[in-house]
Length: 274
Image (cartoon, rainbow, N blue to C red; front, side, top):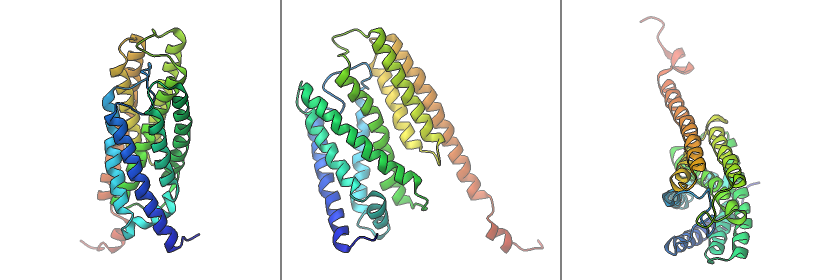
């Protein structure tokens, strides 16, 4: 059903307001030393540099805030994203606020529950965009599809980090036991499988898979107290990164073929005699 002009403008203004809240909350969390995932370092916590993905996501979402006022960005915002985008950004801001309370197990649990909602909404948006049959322009790919792919891959990593922060042990205070190692290994295997699924499912999502692959590398860099976890993360990173490279090469080759293979219209218009 088509939206009225009033609803469209309300939606676009809600996007801007929620983006400002989203940005300010994440900037505050970063400056105060709080990161999404929990106040403790667990045996699946990635290295700090991994959270630099947030900067790229923020930059691309800022582009989306501008792009939505262009005629070509109208359909993507009103039909594909809708009110799900401002809700996602608002819930993410709420999650960051909960994580800003130091040492509070209650707020960490509340943040994890909100994070579940964030993961559900971003997965829903991600599925809508991946299943969209419309041909996307370069600005739409850059400012709509790409930030959602990066966002989704980032939240996949953060979900496991937050789950271990709620139910796991502090890596600085406890040695990794057999159960902890087994749970981390299963989680790493799931992350590697998810990255492979990103690149081999449908048209392939190289950006989202790359974020998860870099997350595995960041976990390997951070987790050096347990050799088993460290080397498991490295092995799964290598496997996932090879899948990303394979998909990248296949995408480049496919693009080159589309440039060189003549279309049916070209064949029909070609002269019969050279």
